Length: 205
Image (cartoon, rainbow, N blue to C red):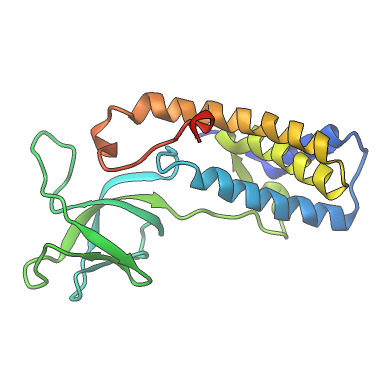
């Protein structure tokens, strides 16, 4: 999937601010603001294509728990659905109820003596922009313009330009809403999302 390097995000924020350069301190602020906005975008949907993994086989331990981590597999950021067999094929698959603790997803309706694996649909763990070597960090394209305008709004707010910040925040939300709307069109009637609550239009909040 497409990404854009952090350096380009930095340059766009600088252009929006109308300055030739930022101080080192301001550069650190941009990283902090960008990570906060990256998390905001990540949390706004369970369906982001780059983070969604469907029906991946995972180990179930003796406590009936699927861990957040497993060797050679992506870390789980959020458990969405867990099935006994490979889901969404031609045949239906039994779906487990579960609850999540710090150890992972604990399967409710199963037996540890007969269950050693499960098929997990989950959202990958997010990766944040590092302070060092940040220029080569890759920003998801679907988040890029939201983050840039939202970070600029944060700078305006920090500078006391509240009214301008509100306007810029709305611009940022418009970019995020467009991307969330695309996900709605794809997944609203998709069986993967039967139990997953998707994007809620901001105007209805």
